[in-house]
Each structure stands twice: as C-alpha cells, then as structure tokens.
Figure (cartoon, rainbow, N blue to C red):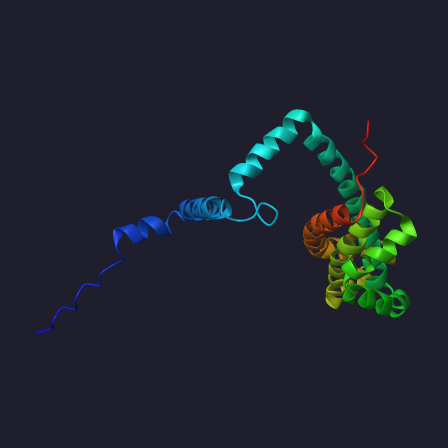
Length: 221
C-alpha cells in the first residue's frame, strides 16, 4: 500500500501578500529612509547635513520668491544645449568610427584617451579655454555626456551582421541604401541606449558645472 506523500506547505499568507506588492515594499522602504533621515538629521550640524522638512521649507521659499524658477531655467538651458550637442555629435562620430576604417584608426586613440581621463580633472583647463559662463558649462556637460553616445553608436554599427550586408549587396543595394536601410536601423537600439546613458551623465555634468562656474546669465532679467 503506497504511503501518500505529505502535502507541501506554501509560504505564509503575509509573505505572499508582500511578494505580490513590490511597490508597497518600495514605498515603505523610502518612507522609513526619510523618517530616519529626519530624526538623525536634526542632531547634525546644518553646515554638514540638513533634514527633509528643512529642505521642503527652503524649496517652498525659493518657489514663492521665484528664485528656483530662474535657476531651473538657467540649468535647463545649459542641459538642453549640451545634450543636443552630445547626441548629434556623438552619433555622427560613432557612425564615422564604426563605418569607415580610416576614421576608426585615426580617432580611436583620442576617444579612448579622453574617455579614460577623469573629466573632473579637466574642468580647470576647460574653464580657462572657454570661460566661466554658459559656454564653459556646456563644454563640461558635453565632455561628460558625449562618450556613451559615441561608444554605443560605434558598437551598434559594428554589430551589424555580415550576412545582412551581403544580402543587401546581392540584391543590388547601393552603399547609401545599405547604410540607411540596414546599418542604421540595426544600430538604433544601441544608439538609444547610449542616449539614455548620456542623459544620466549629462545631469552629472550639469551639476558639476554649476559647482565650478558662476550663475548663468542666459535667462537673467
């Protein structure tokens, strides 16, 4: 006579409830973090760290007197111009390096060297070259944000399988048609990944530029 196997017990209902509600766990974790920050931040020197309620009151004050809106416009102006330059120039350089061997051989050493150098160390030199106003901020942002676009665009162009190119040539496609109808569409996911990474680096570059340069004058008045 066969002995029935014991029924496997599932996880407790509380575990199942929490597992099916990941956003609830995230919200509670963030709330706990802010509560701990609020409690511990009140005992720290304000010159070193503040707490969330003080930040909120300062934000309300800056919004009411209009200073936050002015500063936001200044930063967004620099961010928009810098990101436009980074994306357009990054895609063009990445396509040139990935598509033509001459540009790859000539530009690859400079791209690798500049990418390996911490851009923070170059900020004083950039400030002396382009000044301390918007041009300096845009240059700092571009120097940080352009490389993810270049590298991912290059990888996308080089990743196109040779069989696709051979099929296009077999059907009489010109080099222009191959580039715009095969290479570029195949590289588009890589390009978009580079743009997404570049936006994050661009925000970092904008913040760094704000620390090292005076306030912008583009939106003053």
